[in-house]
Image 1 (cartoon, rainbow, N blue to C red):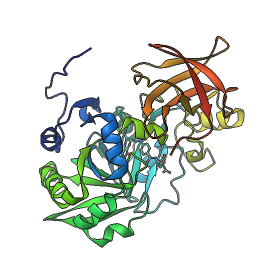
Image 2: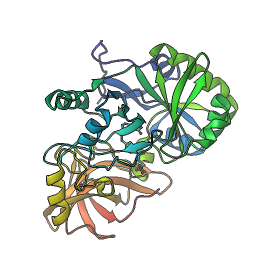
Image 3: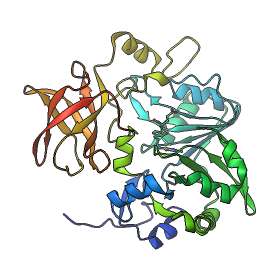
Image 4: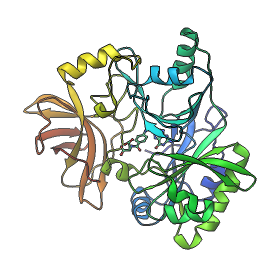
Length: 368
Ligand code: THG
């Protein structure tokens, strides 16, 4: 199967698209109606490079929702079961966002600037509409809008070295999931130690589309001898690390407990979020299914385009939603939603792939 994607104004370029194209991008997906690179050299070559060197990723698709005004923190807490009461002004939190049934609407990173100003760095769903509707419906005194802010990620074992060259030794003082505003040329950017890989690194929140390519060029110039390359979130690496993909591994049909995000849920008195009663009830009964690491031994699989059904003795036992061959672990690594009763480490199920039935082994832990 071979096809192209037709481009128009509805499918947005990013501030870094000229750099991505010049670097020879080979594949894109669509995310928040914007282009997200998926392949440069090959998914496997990109994977080895990410785990050895340093990459610059155009993750502008992680659009920001800005909450600005006296009720910003109240609105932020309405959105998520995670307790935000002790969050500092320089912290970033990975937060489930739930509806009134406890269904996951998104799994963004919340970036706190102050009690009256937040960014929500979203995954692939139309969260802006939900947040605007809530603010208006609840009569809150807060502006809700998409600012001109585009994340650029610097990921890999040499990310720290490259970032020091760009922003100086201040980068060493940024702890995991903390952010700091650092000067660059005539402007400054919020820089956080975060990113959608387990290789370590930073995310630069580029404020102002016009600054995008200048930053891109400067990173490649500064990192030449570090073997810096253009990269992107890597399918194999993120499965090994157990990083979930909204729309793939979970949807609004799943709760945070099903997603294994129970540690981020605090359905207590005084934490006023949408879906609290539903989550409190589910905490008491336990989730009916849950995300698990799954290995599929044997020949490499072709990554799924639809969910692959899981069976135990002919009965449904869940589904596999992400899978890829892992060169480092010499097995297919996968993420699936497994029905209660089949969660024990080593449980053997059958997964129906388009190429036929395969053994699927449930694991207690991810690979990295
Ligand atoms: N960075 C930023 N925005 C984002 C993403 C990102 N928006 C979309 C998408 N990614 C949101 N999803 C995730 C999923 C996982 C993580 C971050 C965003 C993540 N998880 C770590 C883990 O699971 O090990 C840490 C979680 C924690 O302990 O807080 O980093 O990547 N800006």
